[in-house]
Image (cartoon, rainbow over all chains, first blue to last red; front, side):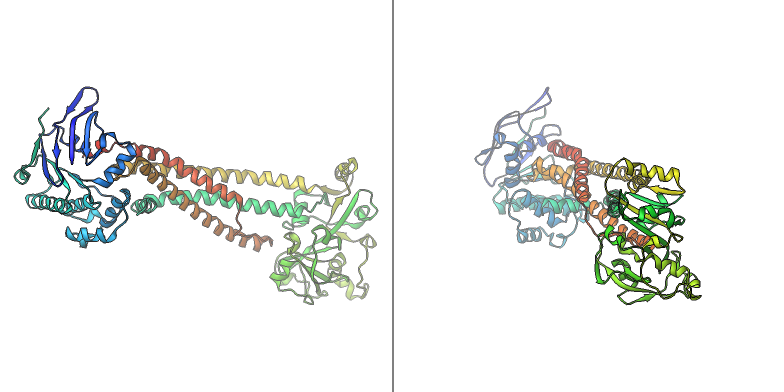
Length: 211
Length: 412
């Protein structure tokens, strides 16, 4: 479902990053591990279509996103990939529910308020639906970010250090949530982390070598 | 949750920054629009009231005052002139003069000016009788439409005039014969609307009522030609020429040089007045333009500085599927929203201001201005507002649309 071949990315002219070929089946949950500076985030951005590789293939389903035009890539990303970041960012002027609606809108999906409400309910954020993101606790913000990544029912969920800013309790809760929701949606999950707390939970792991 | 709603919510999220931009922009637009409104209406008034009058003859003094008092009825009248001195112009067989309208000014009724004249006055302003008839006897009055409405005059109303233009009971010609309204004019959009017109003889009758009481001038109320009263005084004569030629061109100079009368050309004096007012209007216009430019700058700065604040938001929108064009449009839309709202505020300000000015003008000069007319220039102003909004937003918008998502998100 997610397969990379001969993936390379160039930072400027001198630094060339080579990534190992990976193959993830639909519905599998993986961990991408590596020391700081090993290119974890770069690889996640490549997989998420936020960066373009210098060389190589990134196939998500039947689509090689390395070959997509900029506008097709924007659209593909919105519709098929959900990304959770280390620190959760929101549109501050919008409420939590509006942030999710905007995600539907930007992915050209029909606005589905019922789905927004039920998803937030399931992530125990029903009561915070009409609050501004700034009024949420860090744990709640991360749950809301996960809700946004899930709203368009993506095939691929990418999480960049989703637990590193959280305490043990919240970290475990977020990891469980990611696993459960990915499972419920049948989506492939790839978590990029150096958080040791997660290593025991995900048996399938990719290790990036230090440069 | 479309772009317009999003940009609106982004703006209200920073109410103070929005308020500053709106107030500045509204002030700039309001000032310019108010200037346009006042200018347009003043020019309209001056233009309409020119009434193809080529020359005004009166007593020596300020030519502008002569014009303002005799044609626009807003300044105090100049001194008197003897009919004997101007009888040549009043002669219907004068070779160059098409129309000569004598005016006798100086009295009023509750703030509205009474003008002693002849029936030729009506032709000057193409005024038609709406109700009643024209004056056929001394002491009969035909009221302009606006004056009649304001004073509540109807055919048959009798009133007493007062001396000068101030409303003061002590100045009323109490023991003189009353004026009787016999006709009311259709609205003309000219100064005639605000006047009370009567034969010139009425004015003399009021001022010589002592003589009338002593029985010298009895109950003869018929109107006679002015040239029958060579010893009487009037204020001025309005002249329309038959055509332009050397003699008419020389007439003004020869009157001014060879007689103790004064002749003034309306078009010349009014353009002199414009150029005097023009300095002030120009200064105001520049101030308004500077305010608009500053407000454009404030919109630019507030959009630009908000980018730094919002770069994660914008990168986030990109990861959610927004194209660079969409980000660009979002920022441009925010600029446009600000300027359109600022424009709306400015227009409301200017028209409310106009209403206030119109009220003041009406009390002071009996000139009617309308505050809720729309000028084509206001459309141009809207286009300019949109242009400024675009100009202020375009650099921030380009910057925003070029944001590198990956670098932005990785720099947290």
